[in-house]
Length: 173
Image (cartoon, rainbow, N blue to C red; front, side, top):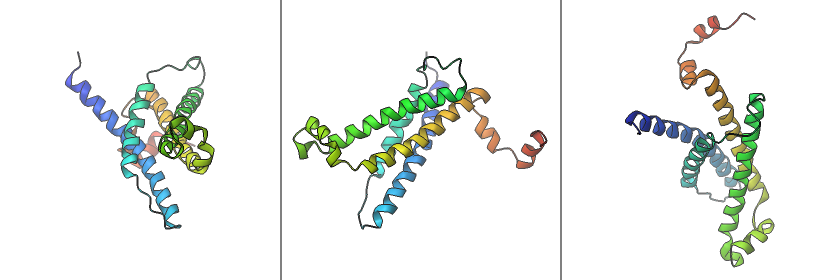
């Protein structure tokens, strides 16, 4: 049976994870706006940033429960890297499908648009998105390992600790 606390905990986790991805995607959005402003091209898509962050957050939270084979006996960085690359492949596929879907009317269907993807898509646009999402996913996966080792409240505890207390707690150099 699902309790009220479990539901609150899940909502909080989705909120903070969404906030994390939103900050990355909002940064990418801002970079695109600033670069396109140079050419007097207006760029809109803020709602896509919010929806993308929410979808990405929920997907990675679900995929955290999917075990990656042969990584349990390896160092943590192996799982982080493999998980990040697997997620990144998924992101690349979604971006390619999105570009094909946007151009389906131009080419008379989704399949034809996909075949002509090289001519219709700006490769650099896809690469920039993939690089930004790679950074977000890598950070998230590293943080998942830190959370696994030190517990859920490690970031909040660390950030609420005075710097002088942190210096005293750290071993001498």
